[in-house]
Every structure is written in C-alpha cells, then in structure tokens.
Amino acid sequence: MAEQELEALRKQRLAELQAKHGDPGDAAQQEAKHREAEMRNSILAQVLDQSARARLSNLALVKPEKTKAVENYLIQMARYGQLSGKVSEQGLIEILEKVSQQTEKKTTVKVKGAPSWKQVTLPARP
Image (cartoon, rainbow, N blue to C red; front, side, top):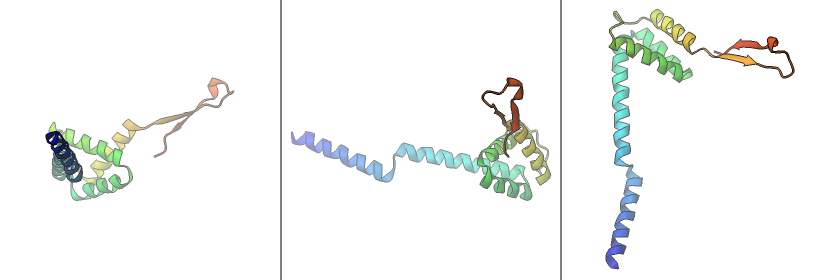
C-alpha cells in the first residue's frame, strides 16, 4: 500500500516539474523553430541588400502573412539558383507585386432579389 502511494506521489511530482519547466519535447520543438528561423534569416541576408531587408522588415510589421510568402519565394529562388546577385529594393518591390497579384482576392456582392446579371465584383482591400 505504501509503495503505491509513493509511486503516485512520484508521478504527481514529475508532472508538476514538467509543467513548471516545460515539456522536453516542447523545448525540442522550440529549438527546431529557432534553428529554422536562423536559417531563413541567414539565407535572406545573403539574398537581399540592406534597403530590401529594411523594406521587408517594415512589411512584416503590417502584413506578416505576405512577408512570409515573399520570404518563401525568395528562399525557393535562392535554392534553385534563380537569383543572380543580391535583390535590390526595386527587385523586392517587383516580387511583392507578383505575390500580391497571385494572392489577390475578389469580393462578390450579391443583392437578394436582384437579377443575377447585377452582381458586382469588387477588388479586395489592400
């Protein structure tokens, strides 16, 4: 009986310590995310010049999802050797326009009771 209580106390204490200090598996995931972020930053540092990096970091404050898409695009281009030299700010603007065109959303407004030929398509808000 005492052994069972002791084992239960050990399990409870172990659970408390894991909750307090974080799960070791969670720490491994955080470390992997950190390494991936460092790798992305180092690739982007090699691919972009200073003004382009500044523009991309400003964009990240406003539209993080668009920034992620542009970063992925640049990293993919770098891995396949499609970039010749560093991307300037003007080159980054062109890439941003490409990504914006690809991800542009259309909004359709339907008015109930109106004929179908009166549907209006509006461009998405930037």
